[in-house]
Amino acid sequence: MNQTDESRKESWSSQNAQSSTSAARKGPAPVVWLMLGVLSLLALAVIFVLPGVVENYELPFTPRAEVSEPLIRPNANQVSTTPALSPFEEAQRAKQRQDAQEVLASLLERQEALEALQVSLWAEAEYNEALEFARLGDESYRTQSFLEAGAQYQLADDALARLQESAPQVLAQAIATGQQALVDGDSVLATEQFNLALLIEANNSNAQTGLNRAKTLDEVEALLEQARDQREALALDAALNTAQDAIALDGANNSARNLASELRSQIANNTFNQIMSDGFAALQNDNPNAAIEAFERALAMRPGSTQAQEAITQTQDQIAVAQISANRQAAQQFEEQERWADAVKEYDSALSIDPNIIFAVQGKDYASKRLQLDQLLQNAIDQPERLADTEVYEQAVQVYYTGRNIESAGTRLLAQLDALENLLNKAQVPVEVQIFSDNSTQVTVYQVGELGTFESRVLSLKPGKYVAVGTKPGYRDVRKEFEVGFDNRSAPVTVACTEEIVAVNRR
Image (cartoon, rainbow, N blue to C red):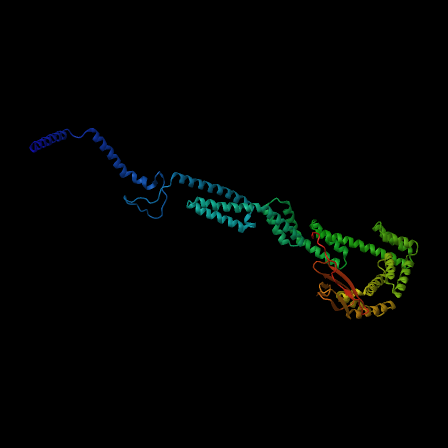
């Protein structure tokens, strides 16, 4: 069988060799030639075209980013370690980029609006802080950290929004500060604040008016100072003219208008008083006709003036001078009798006719002071128990020495001083007061202190009125008022709680 197999192999090999020789004689098929042509064209494209495309583009044919450092071409066997983004991640990044751009658009709109308001002149620090947030957002955007960029843009947008919201308040504050500066006479501050207000709102009428007033403020203040100096020098007419010049420059200046009003009133008062004094002077000179003429001019100046009308009536009756003389004589008599209240009334009566009578002005002043001294002395004498109070005692001592310093002291004053001196001496001498209790009541004496519990106790107290209070659990509180007399004696005082409190719900 082995020989048979070998013969068969040789026969098969011989047939194959004959087939190959036959095929070689026929040549390659047409399909083979076509494939060889296509491969040749592809080879030429790879050699001459592909290098230029690869040099300028990356797949999928987007422009290649310029790289400053030379590229290191990986070996054919190397595999990229950067994972490609999934479609979902690409979508998320695109959304973050769009969100950042939307915030940026709002930010730019606010920036443009604030720059139109000259924001750097009234909120420079806050504005620069907001722009710093925007710059940080730009840095994050360049590195494609769109989420972080959006957050920074939002911080900048919020900061600019706050500046926009504060603009009306800044405007109002600037106007208010400027107006106060006008009142204070500070032209520099007023100009600065009104200019700031106009930067925020160019057509603001209050700021424009304030700025115009600030331009003349220094001149107005100088005129007002001059008017005040003239007023001090009693040059009232000149002062009024100067104040009116200030009003002509700034009619809204309250200081100028008030000063002018005061000057007009003062001039009118002086004129009125002078006319009235002229009338009374004519009366004293026995010239009633001139007096009536003066009083009528005063009445025409102030229609309805009671003083002028009374002066006219008194002059017509020829009793004005006599009345004044009578008041003076009566006041002097009352002073000699130390009837100071009556003396004051007589001087008031004379002053109602002519408030400029020197003797009446001086006499009333002296009589009023003596009346006050008389009343203080009498009150201390009538209420000696008040001397127990230290403050009252010290006041009484001062009143006493005031009276002693009067050179022409009358009989009444000397008697009062002697009585008060006696009381003051006794007020400092302690008196022994015996206080009884039940040894279980807590006793407190106001102005002295807590005495505790006891059966009997002696206190040394200055003359005056005192209050003792007793308390004991289960008993009603007691209150005892007692007086330590100026006769160095005092009745015993008992302070004890004896009235038991009955509980309502006791069973």
